[in-house]
Amino acid sequence: MQAAISSLTRGGATSSQPTYINITPLGQLKSSSASMEVPTAQADVKLRFPMDDLIVPVNSCELHIPKGTRTKKVAVGVVKAIDRTRTPRIHGQPVPEGYARVSVDRVERGCASVLLDIEGGDGEKTLGEVEKTFICWRKRFIIIHGVSPPPPRLVDDQDPTPSPPRRSPTPPWAAPTPPPPSSPPRTWSPMQPWAAPSPPPPPP
Image 1 (spheres, rainbow, N blue to C red):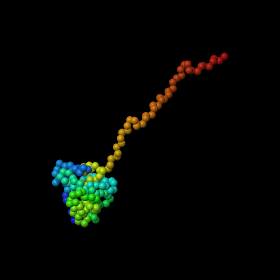
Image 2 (cartoon, one colour):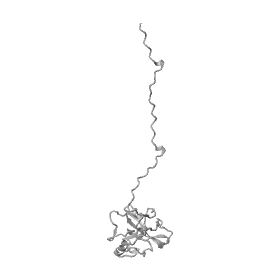
Image 3 (cartoon, helix red, strand yellow):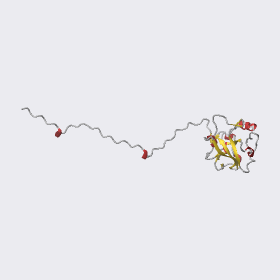
Image 4 (cartoon, rainbow, N blue to C red):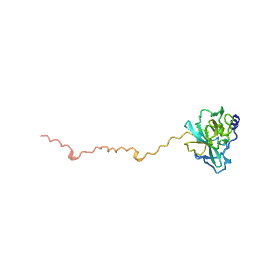
């Protein structure tokens, strides 16, 4: 177990242009390439998957493996949101990049002999041997229930500053009523002759 994790942790040179494959909830692996060209775990290091953006602490999931140009569900389990404040660990060892720590609840019928990328904590080599335990599984093939995963995307060295929320335009019926026009200021005008005061009477 430790030797397998150490070899994956050391890894190799990652590809500068990793292949992009979209994992869909229906288990389809959309690609113009054959299954032999599915990227390696090292090629996934610079990619973000739905697993990386989980907010809910505990999530139901499906574990898939590549099969031709599709994927096949081989088990169901539980995965926790990644704690960014600490290094993910399993059985006392760091979880290799490109993988996540998952709990296997149930292995699908006929899938007990599926080989593990990384041995279990007691040296288990097949999926059937790790039911009800924790193992490492590739993020690429973890399908989160209730999440429609987008295609994997490159991970920036620093997350960009989120842009402020856009304000929707105010509908015409909700626009404030303009104030009524003010009356024009009064101007002084000379008195009309008929309105002038009568002159005083002549002296006697």
